[in-house]
Length: 160
Image 1 (cartoon, helix red, strand yellow):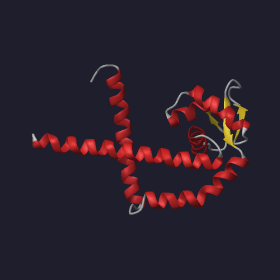
Image 2 (tube, helix red, strand yellow):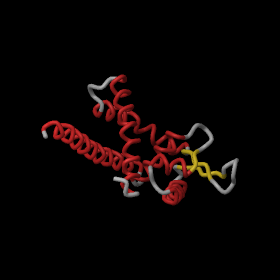
Image 3 (cartoon, rainbow, N blue to C red):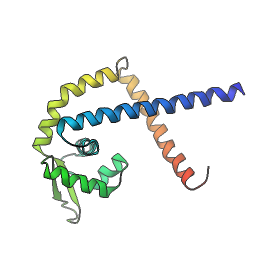
């Protein structure tokens, strides 16, 4: 019995640590968003576009996939961000039915203003972890994320 309990305890501890980290990151995202006068989901959309854009803009579907949210929500919020002049939305050169989104100069300037605070925050969050440790941790978390998606799919179809 003690054999089984140890891995179960480690799994439960891991899950609760992830819950705590998620909660803290959510609060941090809310604060960044407040500094720009937008909502947390809008902040995450801007961050996803910033991450994904390689100079041609980003589709709403790519943003939705990155954030694991519905594409219609991205469309709705991106229109609001466009009105606030944080996003540019232009028809895709490949298919005019779709739009490519990119950050505006205004958005880039506002995000740049936060950069020193973001770096200080990251230093605090990852204190004691060097690049190799973070790389190792990210590889393991990527595996857990992939396995979590599989477990969720199995649960939803009643396999588990």
